[in-house]
Length: 478
Image (cartoon, rainbow, N blue to C red; front, side, top):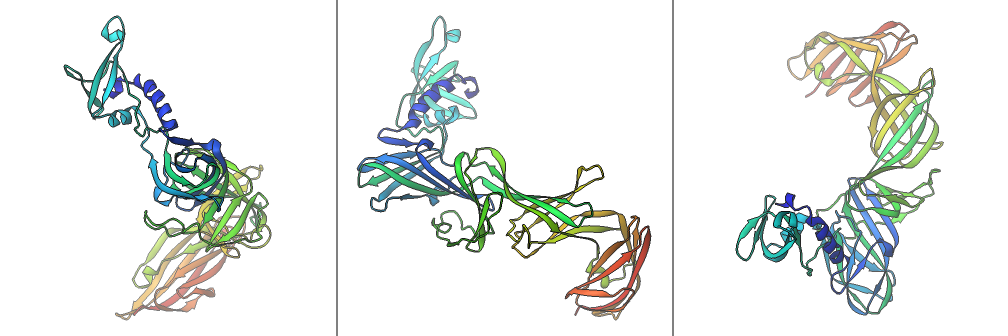
């Protein structure tokens, strides 16, 4: 059984190392030939790799094993270009070998072929003995071998595999058959799309003691599960929602997008430019992204951003059409923080990500205050964060009257009690979404119509006290 022949791993790997180095007539190219590497990562786990190498070719047909590529490469997107336009290179054929060598795969490749079985002395007698056997099958973890005079399962010893021209690879390899017009060293650029590389933006903000300003730091979190490492790569990130055609679409959609460079440059080393209808962020120094690694790089740093904290009690449109009575013995009051993406160190496109806010306590220790996700936010837009519910400010709401005409209209009255246990007065924004055509007939505080379906009342609640909002609304929905 395969689990009983672990000794063969050393033998198998010895042969695979020789075999994966180069097939007969094949030239192997690894990271040592690399002149530059550019990795552009898009939202959604897609990346574009530009791998530029200097490779010596002969005049005529060449077979090149291009190693150190992503294991999740989409081979239908591969594009090879010669940097010297006067000496073009033609691609006659390409094969992506990603069936990596291991003992099980090696046995599978030799089904129907002969191998040498070495019976170790500790099982066979005074010394090791060798026999030729044919691999009949490898199923369910068992190997079936046919010897000259018998059939056996399992091996007490190890198997020696003959040298052959089979495509045994120790790592994913792109094998290119190239036509070169001249012999010598050629600068070649290989580009391809791959899965397995993701990025996200993470923001950390520290609020001032009076909760009026914010210091914000932006980080980019990179995760590499592509099966390859990218050493000293020029890293670029694209923020935006791209439409990705099904696999098999022609390469070039991402390469031919026009780019217009802007003057925005982050102090921490990330430059930003427009890319079609998206935004491209470029790290100003090379970085290494190892396989199976998560790393963070600085995106931005902004200081003294004016912020506004609001306490909001938000309602629902359903009870304006029905008799509801008591709508909540204890209703949470949400805590929101907003700021404008403009001025000072901001006013730059903010990629979608998670914003985590902290506030410093009386001992000078930062404490977590809540987090929220933001979408892609252009400059001059508003960032609005929901951080949680207030502890010392609560609401209670009940319907005090309800009338309907039996058809498409209803009139109802409400009482909203707000309790503030804080030592400071608080303003609470009561936000109601009303269905259909609506009007406020009576109210104890003046409302603001913030949208076609939204009314808002700002209710001042004294310290260690309470306040009550009453209003009557009429709605028509057909």
